[in-house]
Amino acid sequence: MPVLFFSNSGLQGDLLFSLFSQSIPMPWEKACIGKQRHCLQHYEAIIIDCWQIGINSCSKDFISDLKKIRHSKAILINFPADLPNHISEKLRQNGFYLLCDSNISQEKLIQRLNIAIHSCESSHSEGMQNPLPLTRREQEILGQLTTGEPNSVIATKLHLSEHTVKNHMYNIFRKIGVKNRLQASNWAKLNLQEERI
Image (cartoon, rainbow, N blue to C red; front, side, top):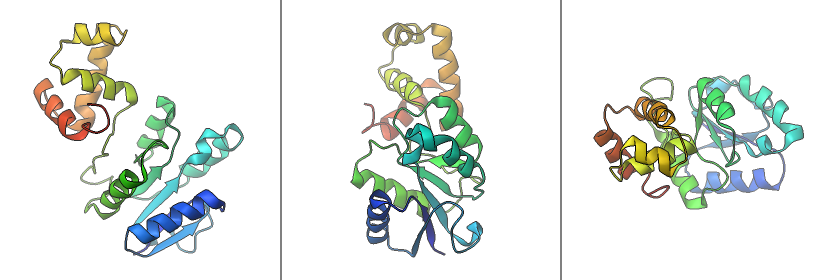
């Protein structure tokens, strides 16, 4: 089954499509949202270039178009690094897999995209883990957790209340599937190595 790449018809979309189709050996198709050749379920995965979210005039229409997409492997790339948490959470709740923001290197993008496409399970079934399913603040807190500091020290360092840190810890544990601080710290050392630590 082919992979569908949704992007604009401009140079950036063409360059990304060329990069993906040359780097990840499988059939690829490119289209604008709603203008694909086949029903979405015909595709192995759907990769969506989200550069438009950062442009105020296009953002609402683009997010509205995203809401119409229903696929078990709908993967978002190239979204703004400062994407508000309420938007990213809403996208995740709608079944989207937020792979990487616009600050990622080309090599990491290809590596993560290849893993995401070839994962055995869809994001809706056995819970395909995002390489970083956490908000930036959660990543900061998790990075601090690896130092072994208590919540009160983490709160002071990040200028937060201890209660806020505890809330973030609860969300972190739930998202990464761990039960205690040691497991979370080990997960962070493996998964946040290049990003945070």
